[in-house]
Amino acid sequence: MALEELNGFSEDPSSDPELCYYLGLCLTQLERYDEALLFLEQVVTTDLNILHIYQSRMILSYIYTKTGRFKLAEFELESLLDSGYESAQVYAAFGFVDYQSGRITEALSHLHKALALDPNNVNAMNSLGYVLAEEGKDLELALSLCRRAVERQPENPSYLDSLGWVYFKLGRISEARAHLRKALSASGGNKAIAAHMRAALSARP
Image (cartoon, rainbow, N blue to C red; front, side, top):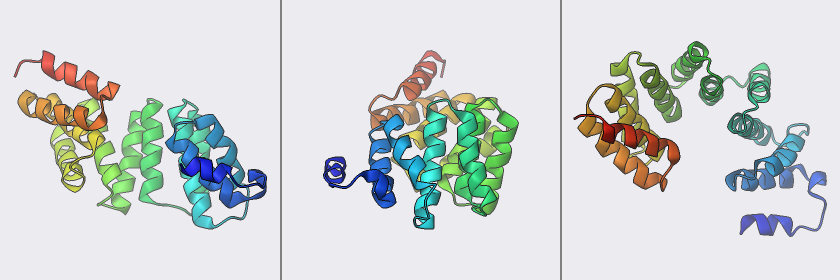
């Protein structure tokens, strides 16, 4: 296991920013977020490879959002923008933070910016489509975006879920059920997708 191999190094991880970076990545994958934070927060205060610092801030924003610490998530993303890292990935991440914080207008604005910078950014496509569907806004655009995301990553459960949810919002229940069923299977039983599936099964075709 990668984590065991990294932990096998004899030196103190805090003395090696690159080791901290890889430990942070592994722990994030394992959803051991508090431990991951300890290592990634060390990385962003060093002069390590600039791409490692960029990635660490992106992961920190993700962890802070997942754990409900939205102001800290915003701080990491704002730090990237202040440093000149204006990218579709950063704006898409900002959209995710905004949406989780209940700031729908800001979420839509950031996601539109992400797609303006990179019209082929699949994460931004899916996120914008999903938020539009949730809010019942411009459902035809939402459908187009989510279809494009699924075309690019047809086995991604999150993207299948978003497309199914758009179909549900459009009242196209049979298509919603088909995509949500596939999403649920691919996700291994994700709770949010299961909730969408229940809603679709309860609706009249």
